[in-house]
Every structure is written in structure tokens, then in C-alpha cells.
Amino acid sequence: MSKWTLVGTNALGFGDQETKEQKARRMRKFDNMIRNTKVKTEEELKKDADKAFKAEQERKDALVAAYDAKKLKSKDAIKEARAIKRKKNNKKADSP
Image (cartoon, rainbow, N blue to C red; front, side, top):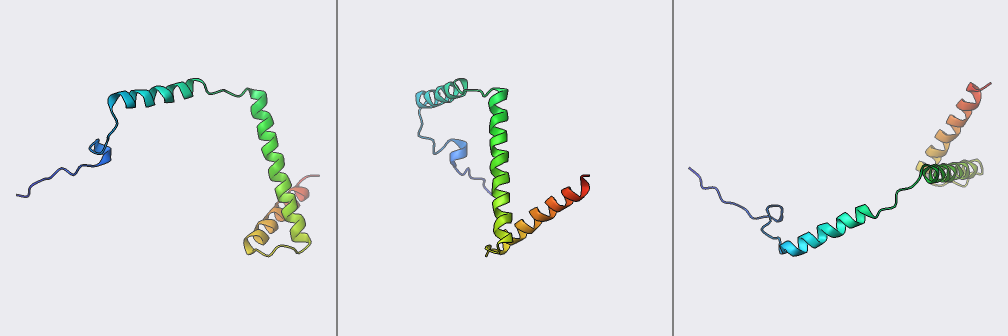
């Protein structure tokens, strides 16, 4: 039969140099951070979402404009611009 040896790892606590007081202090600090985190209201969340959506739309519009002006050099950027343009054209064709 082979002998089993226990390999000490940090996950098992062998390499842990933290005292109980230090660990309690760290956990208390984390609890306080969670407790004191400011929760955004529904209005603030909507504003943030609108801001992010507008920024993404501006980025896509700039990419398509650069594609139309033939200023794009990257193949990935060209593919993305073509895909955006295709989606816009499909949306325009679907709506009356």
C-alpha cells in the first residue's frame, strides 16, 4: 500500500499568517463596506442606462461614418461597420 501525504496549501490554511483578530477586522471592514454602499434609485439607474445606450449609439454612428468615408483600416472594424449597416438597413426595410 502507498502512503498518503498531506500537501499543505494556502486553501487549507497552512500558509495563512493572518491572526483571528486580523481576520475579524477584515470581515468587519467588508461588512461595513457592504452596509454603507449607496443604492441607486430607479431614476438614477434609468439615467445611467440611457447614457450608456447613447454612448454606444454614437460609437456605432462614428464607426459607420468612418466606413462610409473609407477611413477604416482594421478588418474587424470593417466587419463590425458592415454588420451595423446591415442591421440598420433591415430595420428600415421592416418598418413602414
